[in-house]
Picture 1 (cartoon, one colour):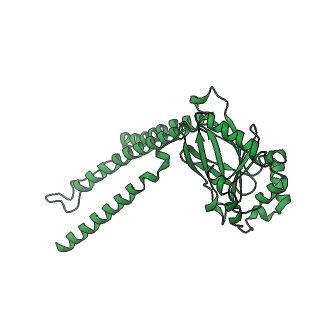
Picture 2 (cartoon, helix red, strand yellow):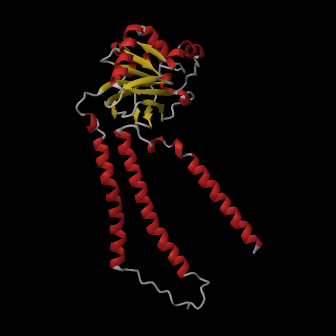
Length: 318
């Protein structure tokens, strides 16, 4: 009896600790606190799937528990011959366990496919406005954000207006990365020599974390960025300031930044699109010509540009 009580306390303690750890991480689940319509749709789909999964689990676990208890081997006054199931060739049972999985898959597939098709277009809430076009170029281990209409390029940070869709044109200079801003929506891959389109939108002003969610080597953990979402007036003020005060991006400077390294934030009043578009095959060849095939093989070292970070400290707060 004492041994059983000891084991019971042990399991209760483990259960309590598990609940504490689970609840302590709730504030880190940004995907359940969306700041835009894309993330909201994806959150609703996740919650729907979780509820559905819970219902399926209950439908399995409850009968399982009943059968374990009812037909347990040490049950008193139970005849050895009292349980004689007749399921072989039972058309009713076989029909049921064939139809139920089909219904489950259908119930999950329809909202998933519908949501995926909806996310291929800008959100309905901002259809009256043209999306802001931003070329998001991943490079080991940094992000280039080019605003072709505004003639601005930023490194490792991003400004966007609220209540307006952003059309991210995703590409990479080398290894495959994935742009992910959890508060605004799910990730999509950046690949060399091709382009993916991702629509995101922020409805609430704020500062959101962005990252590369695809492992790309030794500097992967440092490939992060901040997204500053602000109303259209403040966004335009930021654009005007950078257009007038930021230096021009030269090809020499761009090639320096393009080399595999960890750098700070930078702002330029022109973009690298005037020389190369990495969403095309010639754009892929551009990096190969600069650094050779080893650039794509990961045989490079990390240059931690601390001086660059310090030099651009003010821009970190912009």
